Image 1 (tube, rainbow, N blue to C red):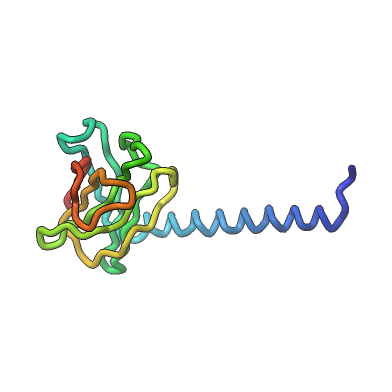
Image 2 (tube, rainbow, N blue to C red; image 1 turned 90 degrees about the vertical axis):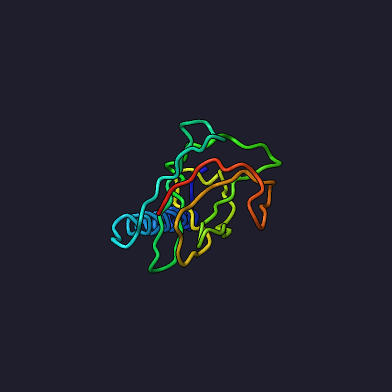
Length: 143
């Protein structure tokens, strides 16, 4: 069955839109790495996690932005009842920075805005999260 001109144009337009959004996303990711105000913090394993556990946080205190580099994740798989939660430690108190979707592999994921932090940590919580850390801390790193 031959493609009509209209169906070919629709297919090309869809491909072009997908390509454009991919380029915009990649440009946004590159801008994070190029921004001198962004601090990259490697969160390393605590005694509750395998020693190779780690994840990278990109923190821009000027914009209060927190991003997780999901391409640099080395965390144990979770079951359906549990989920990782990111915490910012501010004035020695944990502040919820958001739940981590481990299915977002190979992308930068925006978390909740945090105005300032002394360190970041990730705990394993019941799916959906907790207002305060309840589960074991898997990784942490100072800002």
